[in-house]
Image (cartoon, rainbow, N blue to C red; front, side):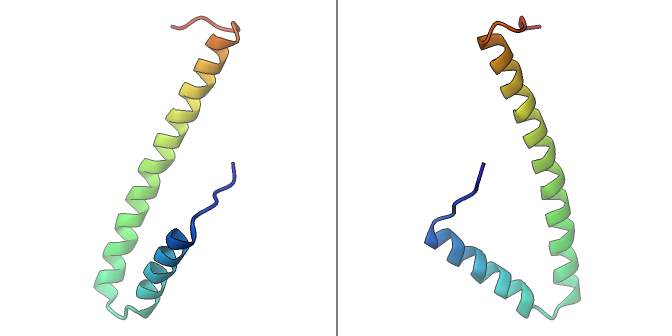
Length: 68
């Protein structure tokens, strides 16, 4: 899959990135890094579970495997 953000989404992301780049407060940047690391961890787990469910549904629909 290829992500194709809208122009508004691209501009919103760019504004966020510039805000981070302009930040000189080490404590704020540290908190942001911690929050981003946690969010990435949860998103990775969610994506792994979603792909697993999609694969199971695909197998069931194609008759390759019965549901547990």
